[in-house]
Amino acid sequence: KVGKRRNHQKIVLAGLSKDKRSGELKISHRYSSIEDYEASKKV
Image 1 (cartoon, rainbow, N blue to C red):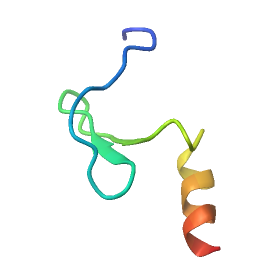
Image 2 (cartoon, helix red, strand yellow):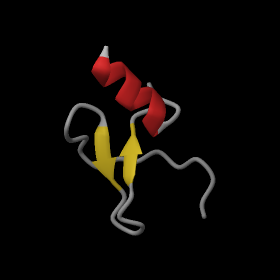
Image 3 (cartoon, one colour):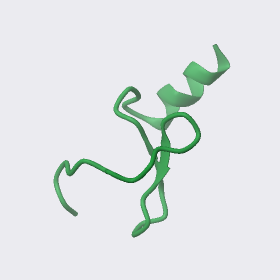
Image 4 (cartoon, rainbow, N blue to C red):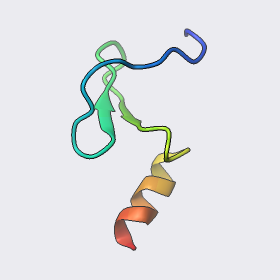
């Protein structure tokens, strides 16, 4: 996997974007993990 290459696709769903290769959800750099993202949504 490539190091830390910026993802230039359009960000959808307030910071969520999908990596076309892996199909995994990626969180914008504000959140270090999905757990942090979920926690921020609950608050």
